Length: 245
Image (tube, rainbow, N blue to C red; front, side):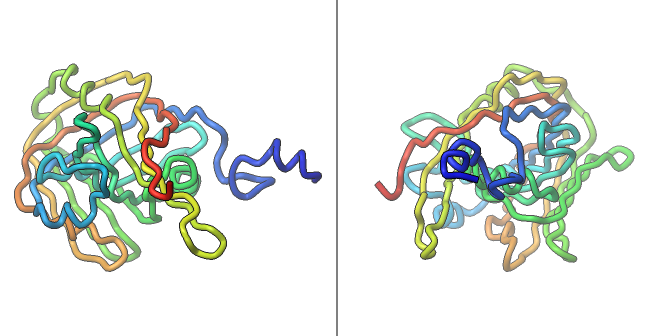
């Protein structure tokens, strides 16, 4: 393979057989359970990076089923998203994500900077309850439950939240171990077809773990829960702040 061919074909690792395909990345019947809870302000201040600002003392804990996703397959995801503001506009910062499928782990980290780790989340209906779990290795570190489709939510409210900007910190190391890329990235969900949205009573428990520290943003009070079914396209990102500039 000559140098020009390397330049033209290089997209992702490995060079001759990338772990994920070129987008766009479309998700059909993407299903969310999002439990919003109050936490400690000091805990948020330790993890939310400037120049983002904390919007409120709350966290959104998410369990997401993705049964049909372009190039990524069928998988489940779980993690924490923190409401923030950037230049006065509300958005959300993804703090932690755990999932059970290699292509979206590799693609999420390399393209956007999603903070993804390998684990085993689930989201399923147990009789009258929507149940989400997250296991890291042999240990269960998160359990969320919600009454199944108790009340319908207004579509405009849900769509407004889904259209908010999302933020990530993308870090790629140099060969000497120092940061070669360290950027604040913004992206949006696109082409959203909302198929349903509901709310109901909810509960959330988080357990300490050294390598999956979801409990470091402790649950002080469950505020609300949302169950969403939608088709979406995951838009590519843009750099809004360069930490190394």
